[in-house]
Image (cartoon, rainbow, N blue to C red; front, side, top):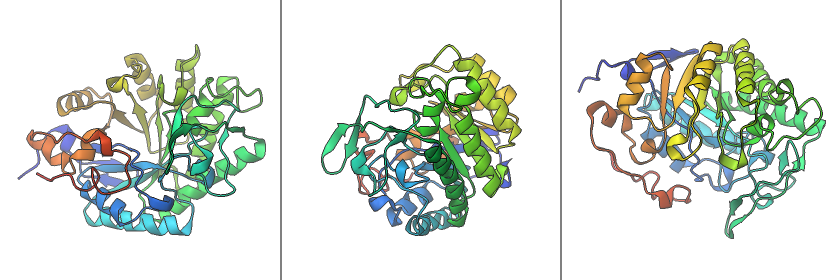
Length: 361
């Protein structure tokens, strides 16, 4: 069956990549990496979804301190790199492109989920008022974080750069820095979690410094055209909240990231899931100020995706939960076939049920 001629299904370029369509599989936590190492099950999962123009993996820790959730992968050890190589080989064999999302959990963490010697770190020693799942004990109050020293910040920034290099070694086509949803980079951006008075907090220039420096160092290691970043203006997840300078902060951040010539900016709008809406004004500002590829995200269906692409609001459109339960989502969207609903009870469980066993067709 020939593909539709709509804009959504036309090929495009992203840095050095040629994407076969403009549908992006959004990053989604799945908790299937036993021992923080992705295995054959993970490879099967992503290969099943290689019909996407671009896959962005689940959040993957750049350093041991970032492994705050149970069974999330990293990409800093030899075993993790070898595990991810199986994934990237499988996706590429199926004709897909894949980047790894580098996610340091920061204060969204529990000490029991970290390996020996790792610590729960954050910009400020402000505890997250939420529970974190711990195997086998279930939900536990988040661990109070240690406020990062200059040495901690330097080590972590180098960790992002090192993980970017290891990601390329693992066969990834690039990396996405997770600066959204209340994880470490976002924690530096947001005054709810950053109450520092040094050069990493307070003013807009100081609060965006960590995000910009993480992007700069990663780009220096693997090339800016292989680095993207995800942000969530007005996001409320993990205790984030807007402040009076919020819109000016994201405008300044977009300017700095654009100057680095990053491959893309991925903007999260989770209003379809109950979060505050990202205003059209903010989206338009980010679109205007960031000169690279712009990825739209948040509750999209085909009609809305097509309309926003035609209007030039973005260049690619990310789909999240529909990809979980529809490995062949691209074909279903193309033909208008009914979508299989996801099983919410198996989103974060450790085995294949609700992961690799959804039907195709």
